[in-house]
Length: 220
Image 1 (tube, helix red, strand yellow):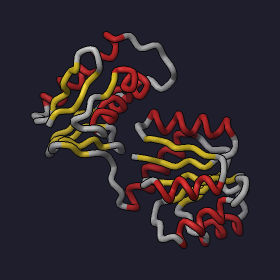
Image 2: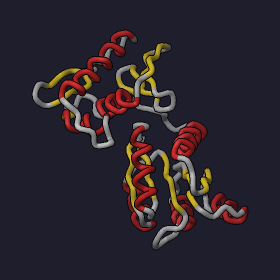
Image 3: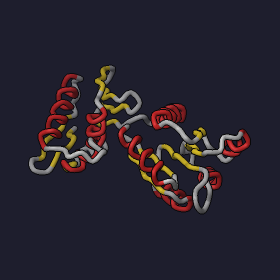
């Protein structure tokens, strides 16, 4: 799932982006209202996290223009202003939820999940009867499921988002360990081995193939 983060405070943007990526979301970040509108016009986002006080067009105007353009993407507004009239103005502009700064990253992530559930947007990817559930952090085949660790979830998400394509080892390591950790080859191999065992236990027809010297790919 892909999220647009519009936040001009670089420290907040960095922390929020990292927290969401650890939940296996893809995140595009911008600090400018005009750039946010451009990105939203050329990309299909599952949600927008929108700071109200940004340079250029402010968050209220960005949200109004999104709605005027026919976009129904869920929008969570971020602001340090907690007065009732400000919250009302945010909802009037087309926002779906309102988070007051300072906020806990875990709370924001849960707000995103709840908003996606309410909006009916897809909660994960599905390939060959195998579904990755980003809410439950699990891989699902029919009525059976297996819970994944955060690292397993991020690695499998990278593979499922590109079925049939080779995903290089470096890309998988960056996705699985987004904190910049040095990832040895055998560490990634061990993660893939665990995923293979979980898929086999679920009776999945989807397999993870090794492309020697390059990486891995999902085969259906």
